[in-house]
Structure formats: structure tokens, C-alpha cells
Amino acid sequence: MHRHTLLFIAHFELTNVTMTRQLKDALLATIGFLLSPLSWWNDAFINLPLAYVFSLPFSLINEQLFLPMLLFGYWVSNLLGLLMLHRGGENLISKTRPVISLRRSLVISLLYSVTVSALVLLDWLAPPTELFALLDKG
Image (cartoon, rainbow, N blue to C red; front, top):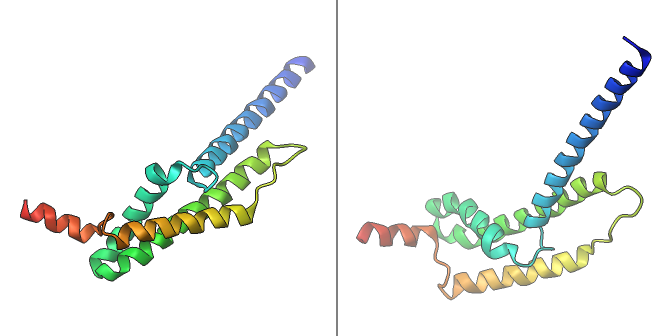
């Protein structure tokens, strides 16, 4: 093979690997953003349903575990989102990195947690065991 052909193949493989890595990092950052407290709308559609499913097995063991495990699952999903966003974004951004306020993210998470707690305590969000009881009666 000619030298130019080898250089082209090496460049193509390097570009392909770089593009694959960038796509993976972009996907990781996107999923992280969706899970993080930086997207305000995500709780109703992503984090709260994930936390609810997470709390399900615990509430089947003891219904009093529903609220603590719901909050724990919610916080874990937000933390995981921040970590995924940081990891994916770190590799995508070359010279300048955006400043993400950890304090702001924690305050927002705390406010959301208080809101979710109020929903449970006001019986607007029922533990899964209550939903199963309703299904059994119907």
C-alpha cells in the first residue's frame, strides 16, 4: 500500500474512534442533564417515577419505608444525573467549562424533596401498597 493510503486509513480510524467517543460522551451528558436538577421539568416525568419504582420493593417490605426510600431514590437520581453530566460534558468541552453551582443544585433538590414529601404526607402520592389494595378491590 501507498503511504498516503495508510495515512488515510489511520486518519479515518482515528476520526471514527473520536466520533464514537464524542457520541458516547454527548449521550452521557444528555442523560445526565435529564436526570439532574438543572432541568426543572424532569422531576414529574423522570426522577419522580424512577424514585417511585425504586421505593416499591421497600414499601412492600414495610409501608413506612415508602417516603424515606422515595426521597433517597430521588436524591440518588439527581446526584447520578449531575455526575453523568459532569463526566460526559468534561470530555466534550475543550477550553472553557461551564460553572455548575453545586449549592444551587442542592437547594433545588432540597425544595423538590420538601415538595415530594408534602405530596406523600397529604396523600396526593400514595405508596404502591395502597395502589395494589385498590386494584385488588376493583
